[in-house]
Amino acid sequence: MRPWRRLGSETVCRCRIFEVERARFEPAGGGPEREAYTIAAPDWITIVPVTPDRHVVLVRQYRFGTGEITLETPGGMCDGAEDPEQTARRELLEETGYEAGEIFRLGWVHPNPAIQSNRCHAFAAWNVRRSGPARPGAGEEIEVTAVPLERIPHLIGEGAIRHSLVLAAFHLLSLRGFS
Image (tube, rainbow, N blue to C red; front, side):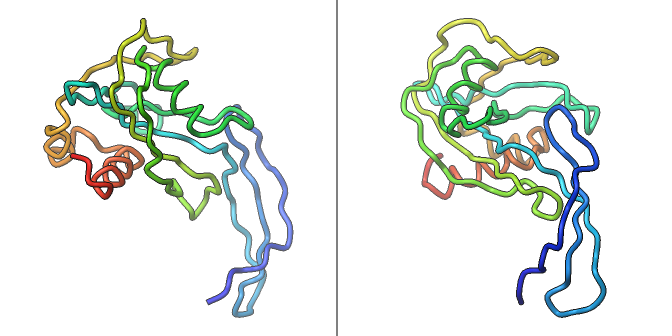
């Protein structure tokens, strides 16, 4: 199998946090030219913050796409050329008021390679401590909570945590032997 050849693209919509592109492709195995729409977005991060007493700091927030309040790890977009680890530290502090002690890169995933080109970088932070109030961005309403680390598999199993990028971060954490 070979990649398809991209023949060209144009931006059809510019939004605050992403662009929609229409691209033309030539299939690797031949055949007629195909058109596809993709989303160009900055890289994202998610971070699993663990306190000295082994509680995971989580956030609840309303998500427009599903129209639901979700339980998830802190996360957000990399700003410009900001390094993903810097973003992780910034988002943790902004969304929760906690600062990371030690921070570890867990890996990255493609959020949806069918239509997106960006990555979501996952981190874990140990010995996080509250340093002040949360300062969420404009338009964000966030409730901070902490749950024992050993309860995470139960929360996932019962469907309390359903955000796929958060599930990926917990999976990457478990592959590193942390539990």
